[in-house]
Image (tube, rainbow, N blue to C red; front, side, top):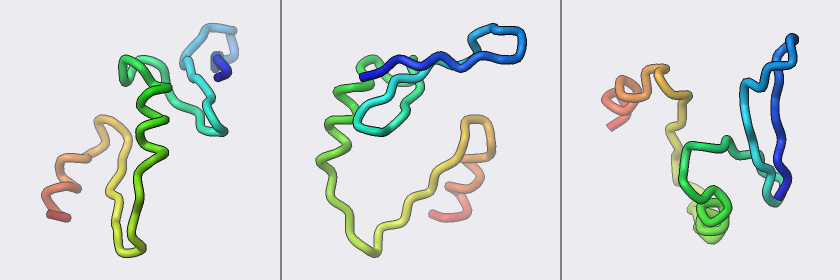
Length: 68
């Protein structure tokens, strides 16, 4: 696990990430991101599976209503 801090031009930290197994994950979204990533790495997917993903506050609810 590697901690990464993303800074703006003035040097202020704007985003904190951890890197685990080549995946960068924002700190603060889940309480234990390492456990979350380990759990997700064991999921299996079918070729027909579809993922609907979006950024927060970008119309995810609306997209969900369209898709489902």
